[in-house]
Image (cartoon, rainbow, N blue to C red; front, side, top):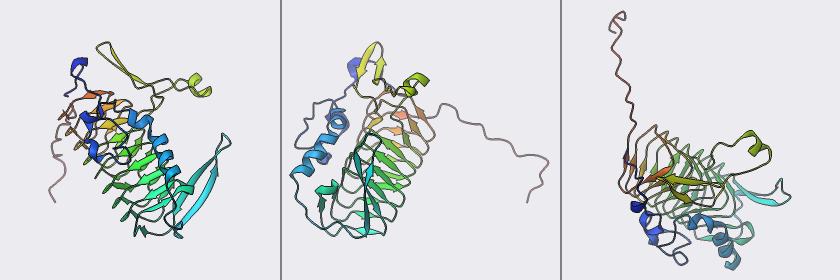
Length: 281
């Protein structure tokens, strides 16, 4: 496993992980030298500012169902369900519902979108996907069947095609998540913490060098061009540099994995011999 534990070689800037020109909705407001988790911290406010200054560009599509869902805290959430397959013929902005859909976006039947959400041009969201709010998805992306995305940012041409969970995470351009990838965003809590709804702040210690992201939930930052193999799970507070490969069925502990890392399963099961008591077919 190629993991860096030397604080002097770690770089947590936006420019280390991402091509800033491919960051949707942010490229005019973010500086490349800022800490990368600033993108997550400002996701909700950036979406709010976008919809506050946007005008309605179309009637709400008739193929969608619209619901103001009551919350436990006494507020409401906007929930949109796609009844029939739908393709955006032009950019659509619905400020009242805090939803942007770029031209060429494909929404398959049964997609659920909890807003605010910004889905850029030519992105495909497949059957059963759940967009859970505070989500920005760049152009030419794929959100697959039974994939859940919450409080996260996809750059350009990012693919999460099958059975993935992406929570409080940043995914670079041309990143691919294999089927069943899980980006965990919350560590174990004690009984008392759950009983009293306590979320400890997340951090990462490497050689006595503390990285404090000052968040209660934090998934992964995956740099441009990286590949995550099928059925891998990434622990909260995981940073993966660009062009890295995480092989299938890996549990990746929290930490900093530099540019072009390769992480393989250290245990390769032996090939069993054929049973002697079974005659050949």
